[in-house]
Image 1 (cartoon, rainbow, N blue to C red):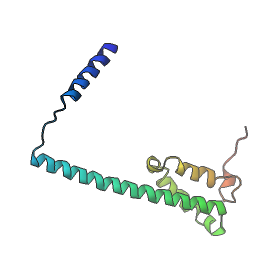
Image 2: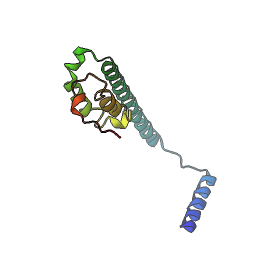
Image 3: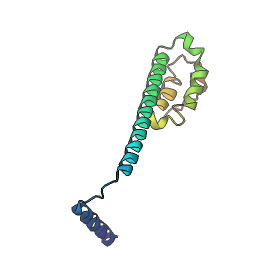
Image 4: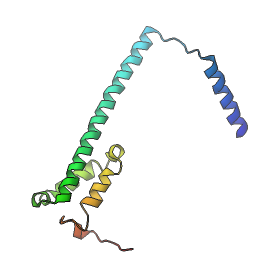
Length: 124
């Protein structure tokens, strides 16, 4: 394994040392630019979606923290939206924020949330 690793490092070093990269034709450069533009648009869309998810989760956190009676009327719809969004594929964008909102805020024993009594709490 060490021999292979050393050979690979040597080959990479020699490629870097040569420093010559083949020039792209005008058509290839245009294709590269098109691809870079597509990737830029996708990145912007992902950033926008991430921002919207985070903003929504922070709003839910705030509502759950103050726990107005009006919020309790919509708790089941909010939970379903969270299960379909941030807790499904959205977790790749917002990390643990979705789970923290879902578990800590909405199922907190100190919350007056109508679902908080349905989750058995284990001590210890």
